[in-house]
Length: 486
Image 1 (tube, rainbow, N blue to C red):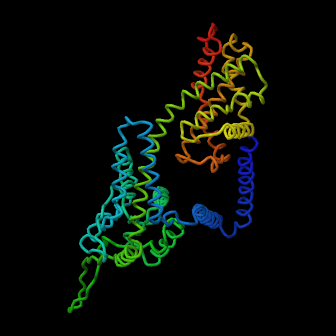
Image 2: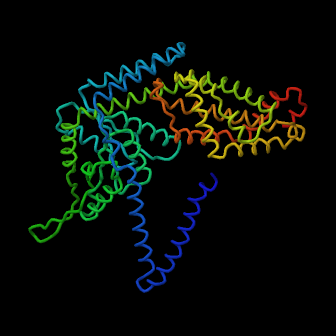
């Protein structure tokens, strides 16, 4: 485990050393050309590769994943099942009626006639100007259009964080988003666009105030935007607009030969935007509503599943507590070597069965034993058994009376590992479907391993271990006299 974690650091260190050596050699050999030119070229090339690699992970735009009526109906049934299960397991929950109301609202969203467009972006990018223009000069569309201007994104301070959260919520509740920027994207703008894409939100990216750039500069910025958001925004959905053109000086020659200078404001430029919006609404209007409904249903599902998981976790924790001290007492009475400790204490087949029943995942004893074996192998590969015993022993060393007690390290280690195994199963089961047939249930060892690592790291805090050891001494040595020293 340790060697595996260190390899990326080792490779990265060697790569950095080699890179610095190469850079030094290049800069000396090309000194005649100019050091700054060399460094600038390398930096530009590195920036380009970074942008390309940043977008390479999402070659298929998430916002373009097809959502059809069948997938919406399927998700709606899943949400109804979660709400029904919550009502069955916690009938007194005050959220049940709210979830049912939200489900009904999401389903009725499919039949609304209008299309909702959100206008968002940072501070002073022209959101209000665009809203005024599209309101007074409607985009040709077969359905009514409703526009919403969101608060400015990325403003500083607590109020700015609230405004950003509100803006993102409004953007995700719309059918289509017009995202305004006045230049190349910042990191925060890119992150926001990625969030919208992950939520399957269709975005049209507008380079607004484009009249402030020369034609060649404007074209370069548009090309850079296309490269930056590749895989997130369609190239045809990146458009230059000018919603509040800056006045320009115009000189006119009079009949007497004198020249008069005056300021004239060029006309606004949103023709390309209007054409693209008309095309999108005509070809994809229904799909935009489907995606909107899908997001609403997903939000209800996440909230209802979280409420159900809280109810189940409240029932699961006493089961884990009970099992950890049963196993800990057995290991305390009959100390076992570290590897046997893993098999006898950390993974308890009966606990798998009990937790499965709480999460409506009924395991046969054979399947539970397979899960126990899988958990044991993962713990062994990660080296958690040895690390656990060392950690517990280190805590016990603070008091000699408890440290020398026979079997106490093994007993507490067994209890600790059993708790880690139980919490891992809870996290794992919370991520599963509500009901999975026995024949179709297979353990995802990668997910199990990742969950196990996360749970183990979260429960390595010194304060938590002090509390666990104190409880363990009280459980395993009820007549001990050194408890207060721990």
